[in-house]
Structures are given as C-alpha cells and as structure tokens.
Length: 319
Figure 1 (cartoon, rainbow, N blue to C red):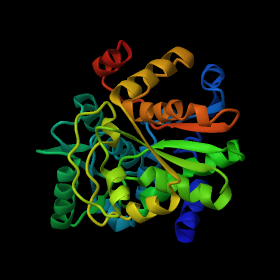
Figure 2: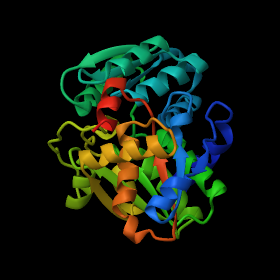
Figure 3: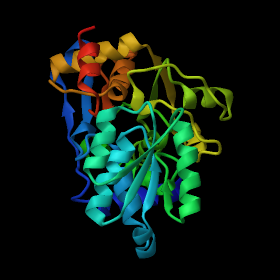
Figure 4: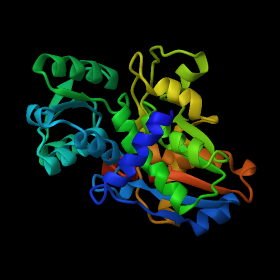
C-alpha cells in the first residue's frame, strides 16, 4: 500500500492542469436534511463527466513512446472509455474500447466523437474485459483495465489527496464501488493521511460483484440484475488487484435499493441542482440510509459522474 500511496502522490503532482481539482462543496440543504455536515465531491465536473479521467490520464502519462505509438485497448461500459478517448486525443494515443452491447448508446457515441474506436461485445462488462485483454495481446497493444491496473488506481487516488487538502478532518467518505479501483485509491490515501476517516463502500442491491467477493473472501461470478448504477455494474476480473486493496481500506459496506438510488438522485437535483448518474446516486443513497448514525459528523459523498441517458434520468427523478 505504501508503494501505491507514493504513486498517488506523484500523480497528484503531475496530472495538472489536465485533470481538474474538483470542488468539495458543502450542501446546506442536504446537511440540514441528514443532520450532518455533508460535502459533495463533484467529480462530475471532470472534463469527461466522471472520475475516470484521473486514472486514464495517469496511465497514458506513464506509457513509453513505443507504447504510445502502438496504441491502447480498454474495456468499458462508457465512462472509462470516454476518459481514455479524451486522454488519448490530448496525448496522441490511439484508443480502442471494447464495450458490452448493452452499454448506453450516448456513451459510445461520445467515445467515437473523441476519436476512439469502439468494438461491441456480447454479454456483460466482464466479457468485454476478457475480449479486450485478448485483443491487446494479439495486437501487441497496451491493455488498460478500468480498475485492475495500479497506475489507473493511482490516478483515481488523486481524488483522495484533494479531499484531504480540502477538508482534512472528515469523519466518513461514501464511495460507490464497481471494480474497486476508485475506492482503493481514495482509501489508500485516507489510511495514510486521515486514518480517522471511515471509508464506506456503497453498492446497488442489483449489482454486488465486489461486495459478494468481499463477503465470501474470494472473487467468484455473481449474477447481476439491471440497475440505474450502470457505472458500477459488471463482474470483477479473476485475480483483480483491487480485491486485496478493498479488503484493506474498506471499513463498512452498504447496499441500497433501486428506489433509494432514485430518491437520492431526486434529492440532489432539488437541493443542489446537480444532474448525477446512478452510481453517484448510490453513494448519496447510502449516506441517507446511515443518516441516523451520522448526526453532527463531517461527511463527504463522492459524486462519481453525471453521464446518464436523459430519458433514463428523467424516468428516475420522476419516480
């Protein structure tokens, strides 16, 4: 973990101004409603609309000249692919994204608009990951996992560095979890610089791959259902380096229902006028669920992104 922390510190120094330092905004109304001092880490304000731009930028920054010339391959349901497409455009690296056929069309269109190529794969996100890895080996290109890569995790961890600088005495941080890279990076920073801060991992009840692995003590295939939190959906790759990191840094695990996610998305639209995607709603929903235990405490909710199909968003907030 110390080695990862060192990489996060270096990324924090090297990624500016390409990666934004996002605000940690105090939400007056949500604080009043939940009875705590609640801050929103506004990762939806990154250039690609999600935190994924951190990890993508750090990974491409560290490629050799030969690796940049050969190009990169990734697997993504949207946000990771969008982030790599923009980072690749800025750094002159050709990027191909392997995506599940169920990925949101608007996210795939954005990848293409940024100059990335898209290959659609039948099945879920795990199938796309395995296909992307195989293609990278065959084409001698760098494969960039959405989470199973220490340099990607280091980039995501810069969010934790910012939060420590912005509010050094947080009692808890709520983070939605998919493959575990984001919370692994944030948690690594907090354990080093703010060990009193509780790291609370959040999942939708319909997509619990990493949650189930942590509960069982090993990674195994988990059947998932449709969820508003498509950014955290999909299986965890066998042998993922995020699994032991999550075991080390997560202090508490919370599951939320689809209705609770919708309610959180409605709440933040009303209180702070933010449009957020389902995964960001998961983190806020978990904070709402634990509100009775948070009275008087200083809490951060990470809003991981805003990239949601308009029709899906409107349906969610209309109830």
